[in-house]
Length: 326
Image 1: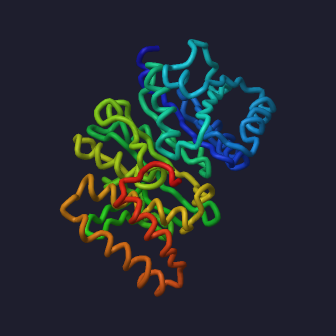
Image 2: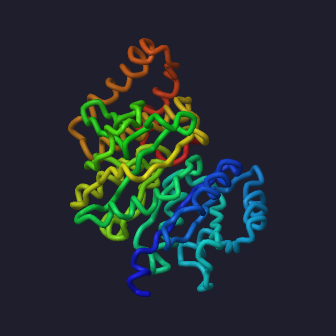
């Protein structure tokens, strides 16, 4: 039993006003073929009736639900015995804490329970295949590996990669570009390799990483927190691995919107915070690289410039504003 507990995975799914896709994600997650896991649904203070809709779904499945507030959860909750595969732990954060803050409540809960070996952070707009978790855990058992990311495929185009596990960091331009984005899943991306950063849409992390580098950086609120976490893990000596045997479909942008004013604001502001933290000598260059991206590159690609978001993100960075945009 002790050895079995050492392999337990806490699956963390964060919801904010998106019950429909969260329920579809939960339905896929509970079909995993991995034997030792606990599903934890975190809600960032949804106002669309998400909690009640999820409760109804759980009841219809005949599952058990255990609900905690954020404070109780971060202390490990109550010592109930839970029934594997038929229990959903529901943590109500009470407010929109963003990706990092919302997931941190789940990570603290898992750490406090004492039986966590891995945590799997999974966006609520994903649909993991049944074997994805088992494949990710197998990758993380390799010596020195601290995080792993799967093949993320576009849900509407399941033969096309959104990313092979994560991103390549380009410090000079302050950019994080997806690996193999838009490429066909034609067998050319079936070999594991090390990553600069694991994509936070589906990220398996070892307990040892959490103990060594801590939780996600909540100041980002949205975007770049996975790159920050990955960078801290790498600097602590852990490897980040692409796991091609794990497959997860992703409906990107369900909460923030793809290339929206919101996403551009956080990308610019937080990319500057990331650069200041890890590559401070390049900070004078990155705002100009971002400006070029929001003008020349966007015009050539016939994409929205969103210059207001660029300047707003730059200003808030200069003023030291972080967390959720007010």
